[in-house]
Image (cartoon, rainbow, N blue to C red):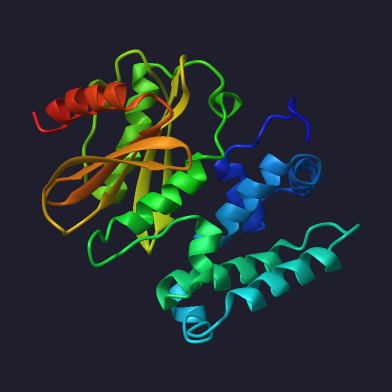
Length: 263
């Protein structure tokens, strides 16, 4: 795997998945996928994240055994040896595999590396998906200058339009951590906002926000994919800060952040 290939932004990968890139750009992305496992992994993740898993696949996977799913994946990999990757076929398979989360199939826990009890913590699922996604980030993913305040404001306005949450650069500024960009995703047919940061000491960090009607919850901490996650909620939103920084530093950042968000 090459270490000097620039990973495309998620917006570009999503456009590639949807067939919206010009032929020259599409060919460049396909070459990057073939050359770098990180690009291929992120493309696959984005490919499955937008599919209507529950409606399309849950009835079919109600009793799907783990061994069968693994055999399907091995067969897909074998057929594609020496060929350009067929993302729609893998996308369909990964969508079916992700649907096992809804169906309660044991295979999803082996695949996602999590074991959760949704009756105790219904927010665990979205945090697991986000953690898997953020784990693909490296410092190179977020390389580049810090956007000026006016550009940050323009990006943050997207969150207001999609989630109805007005944020300013000062409200989301983290001490000692560089603001990099805002990214709008979708989880369970709801907009999910990600504000990406780069900590010079520990690497990528992200503040993620999604609408929630579960009520207020004080901050709690957990570990996912080798990172610390601090999560909390207000009456209308669920938040999580995820990164590689030590737990005590993450907690200090969250304490300061919450004071600004609720001011």
